Length: 263
Ligand SMILES: [Ca+2]
Ligand SMILES: [Ca+2]
Ligand SMILES: [Ca+2]
Ligand SMILES: [Ca+2]
Image 1: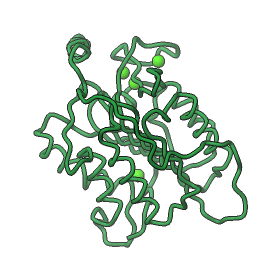
Image 2: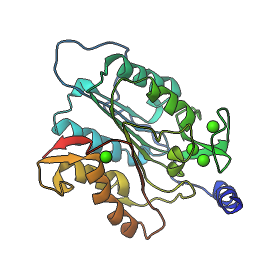
Image 3: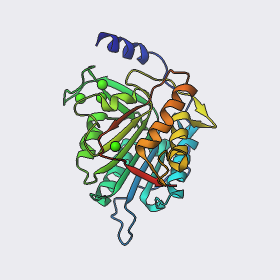
């Protein structure tokens, strides 16, 4: 435990990502709380790239284009980039998703940006003493506890959430975290790790996952790429490309393969 505390405290005085923020408004969409009617598409996505990562915003756009090319309808995806990633906008997007999603629908939540940790707040659920969070624009935070509570209200039994951020393994290390039944959670690193490298203008993790979802991760050749397949395709490659300084994690609370794209 002390080792983990030490690692986190040490990490907190280093700079996670040193690039400065640029303003991007590419394809930023409004997040109106409207229930869509009259279509049979049962997939819903929120793709977020927070400020500071705006320099690398090809990451989110690449993921967005990947899902769109695989039949995730444009009006079923909320893309939030840079200054549009306020806590208010993200919560509104999650509420839009909640209004629309049903039991058999597939949920895709992708966050790329800064991650951090704060002293464990109620519910006190963390062995390491810290709740982890994602950082929104305007320097607000959404903790693992908060996100878990939001997803607890969802009807969907097919939820994929991806955290491409520092300390993101901590999104699944507490009892009130996102590691719950009917969900697959993928994180870019352990709860004590930071460090990022970028390939072709995109983060290694985001790029590999998107490659995976396009077709490459279809290991059993059934024409479908699952969340699990994309993770097991990406993880070993990323460990090598990122010089073994970053180790992705998976929580698999979904029985069977959580299907995301068709090849
Ligand atoms: Ca907590
Ligand atoms: Ca923790
Ligand atoms: Ca946690
Ligand atoms: Ca599974």
